[in-house]
Length: 414
Ligand SMILES: Cc1cc2nc3c(=O)[nH]c(=O)nc-3n(C[C@H](O)[C@H](O)[C@H](O)COP(=O)(O)OP(=O)(O)OC[C@H]3O[C@@H](n4cnc5c(N)ncnc54)[C@H](O)[C@@H]3O)c2cc1C
Image (cartoon, rainbow, N blue to C red; front, side):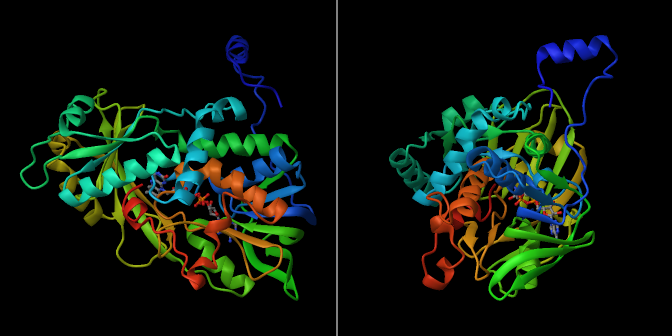
């Protein structure tokens, strides 16, 4: 595959852009692969990429029922941070954040990683204590964060109102190298690199059944026929419960809709990401100038990939006290994705009761930031049978009571 470069852009500019290749191939499925990954979201594609790059396993198919990146990966608000409380969480999220730093060069695809800084506002005494605790934990974990006061918050975000009558800003947990990246580009960059390694990214190919011989997985049924495999990685976010059901076991997950919206584009006014967990909203400004606003999950289980009016109202109402200027913005569009939430708000990267079948799910409202770290660890788990990044995230931890409690860090915010 031809490399993208400034020289290539100049050359194509001179010949009416007629020389670009397709970024990835659209092959017909083969009858058999060494590894099948179900789900061409960011986590599935990253897993395939690191299977090839780190372990030389390239006889791989990534099966996607819709279009690649069309699930939560293309629907999120792109916040990247690694300021989690528990050691195992900090390890995988910080691995991911550090891989984002060089992802564009690694994939030769501009994922527009923007380490503009992420702040999580403390608007109650309880939050101050919680975030100070996280900052201390992060210091021990080697994750660079600090607790800053309200004046510094105001300096970094001039449009913020720190003297709100109900929820004044009392400080913030600040991660200067957190930020955002272009979500579609992350999926497209991984897909292009996988295709370049000879892997098959097969869109419009829905897995409808999982075939076993005894306790061992031997393949999948799809709407394009049966396909055999030695190993199977299931990476389908909100549909994980359905795939587990096809294999004959249950996962401790709930699927719910999570929504977001964007405003009309305005001039640059905020160059950091701000999360306000007490009032339940968060905001950043996109490169196009839109204010990207996210809220909470629906309070009932569902599989609805669209937005609803009451969420716009709730989320914007929550943020208006802290950001009075947004009351005068027109909202342009809203959408939803189906997120898969576990009881301890930590993901599952695990072997399963079916030999050769692995699951990567439970990222809930905050898995975009984890894509490269999750792919790195999950590829190792599939290739070697264990991985230091994944071992504590086994699905069996719920049976054993070994929860990785991140409900404060990930239950609400992203
Ligand atoms: C509104 C919203 C805002 C968010 N904001 C953030 C944020 O700011 N920061 C953050 O870190 N995270 C955020 N998230 C969470 C994040 O988007 C997800 O955790 C992450 O994208 C999950 O990626 P994935 O690859 O596991 O799943 P997905 O991208 O959903 O990919 C799974 C794929 O599996 C496919 N699939 C399902 N069933 C089948 C089948 N039977 N056969 C074949 N394919 C199948 C689906 O079509 C889908 O493409 C947000 C999510 C939403 C919805």
